[in-house]
Image (cartoon, rainbow, N blue to C red; front, side, top):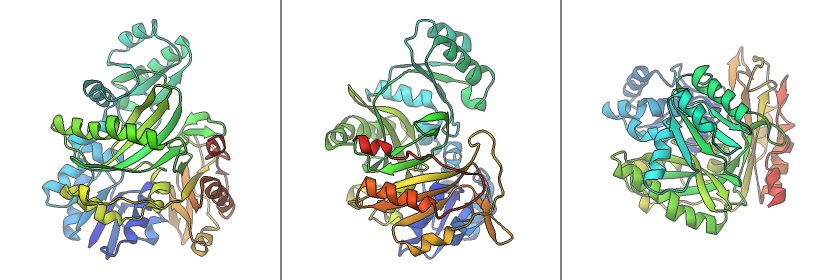
Length: 423
């Protein structure tokens, strides 16, 4: 079969690597892809939001399955357009992708169906938001309602900070139209855990757990980023936590979406906070996480194509989802200055070293090919991932592998997975 992957980051490279392992697949295309994906797939110069071109390309090449990796095209309705053209597609339709596309929608859904989450209020009037903050308890969390590349969340420790945050999100529109509506949410404390899951509209199969590191600097300092590294599994995601989440969070979310006439097929990413009062939902995403996919997919035993098709066909209950009994750690190599200002176009050396070692991966996020050389082309450049028998070994392996890669202005955090030592 012929598969088209839509996207250009480390997540899509991880998806492509899993798809390439399937015996069912003869040919992989990726739109638009990157220099790393190009080693597995034929990259085509079509943007993820160029829906008409993607539909035409899928028809022309007689694509058997499209996998949409990115949030913007999912929320924008790409799956609807592909399906209406008769093309099998893995991912939620527009009316289900709103689970990620609107934080206000997802918070209201959780309130209506008693799914554990932080107390909150939604605002589309900045004056009303400011008045509410006058009586609020701090710290408090401000969230832009729409998509903001993982950066539209502000944790405010004082009323002054919160007022500045309202201005940033709703008046200055730092995150564009994503800030037209804003969620003000109670600040939760505890361990953060990410759980990706496959969903076929009625059945949900959670994957192995992971934990992301959003802040740019060591010790969780600096600005929020798209993710500076991750590890899997999380030692804080115990059997008791898993049982609670399956009963009170995972299945109720799938059932709630179906009850609302928005059946969800694809990937639901549950961002969880393990609080003193039990697990609560921080956020939903409607696709594989990035960089969570880079540690979860390499540990998955199943054929990704078979699982994706079961989600589309509503037969996920027949799938025995299995993961290796090991661990993986991903360290993001970024351009110094990310996420604010950074230079691009530096040649990257040492990538061939990964071909010589089993259990080591280098997923490309921001790269491109220029005159036969792979060069940096983004803030997050590469995701260096390694497996190990346990998290400590995987962490040591991943950091050792970061030394193989060299490019000017290379930057990384040095404490990815440090929480492992505290478990």
